[in-house]
Image (tube, rainbow, N blue to C red; front, side, top):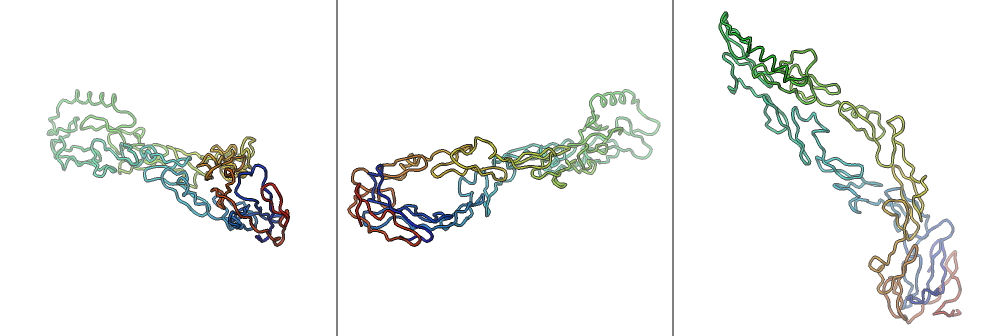
Length: 426
């Protein structure tokens, strides 16, 4: 029963151990500066005359970094958080040495609480569609306005009304982006209705027609639409574009992108938001949130934004007086953890440590009696029955273990064995 770098002692059974299995037990101790790892702190004398449990080692107790746990050999190994409740991730958990991270399926965005939320592509990526965008769960599709058609639910292509004979021109049809124009043969003039062609000198009376068109155009079209002179209707400019100030607003060429966006509506290049986050992360130390025409910095949970609006600094939760009761608070980057005393566990809000009542979970694994106390528990047996080496099951006791020799660098104390309530001199 020698343990390198330590020693062991024997103890008579205390009064509240009257129902336990063993006549006596020994407890391992390490020399100053070392701690027990990889075995049992206590070894009991079993009914078969053998000592129970595994002999531990004495090693320097390491405080493992976040994402690591100390193994039986005393070394810190990766914790693999994904093995426990998928790391708290709602979709995909990725483990790496010393940590993990969550990710989402396509069409979803990771939130600060590690959940996944549907991306509204029509709001986040409004430049994806030239005209109207329709969001659906996990994806989106585009709708085209009059004069355009989509073959893939994403892009909009111009309809050639002239080639498809979808026009009202009297002589010649000329296709334009999103519409068409009428032209006349030589010696004929196009009338104000934009459709009719008459020989020179035979103009029709168009005063009423022109007044009607002008009146309707002024009444219906705004700074975001241009006039289709053939149909006397207002065609909205593509998304995130407006009519160029001072222009005649008679075609898509008069549509220009709004400030903070870039593109070319006339060339069917959508007006897309300039992502300031793509330029040096907007100066943000952590998260950059792009918005329409601007951006701002944000911090993950456990950090707070500095007064410069760019730098995220760690919040030291351990400075608060109401954290980690019955334990020690250890601040970490972006969070903190409660290192609870033995027999305690951290509550979900990390504010304190509460006693683990092992007896409430399948009777602590005890076959008969489970006795809980603050910081631990033990199994006990009724009558003359005694615990087996597994510390859980009960069996009758008929033998006593041999006395132990003094271990290297230690002693067996006291130098007597106890049976029942009476010491036996050896």
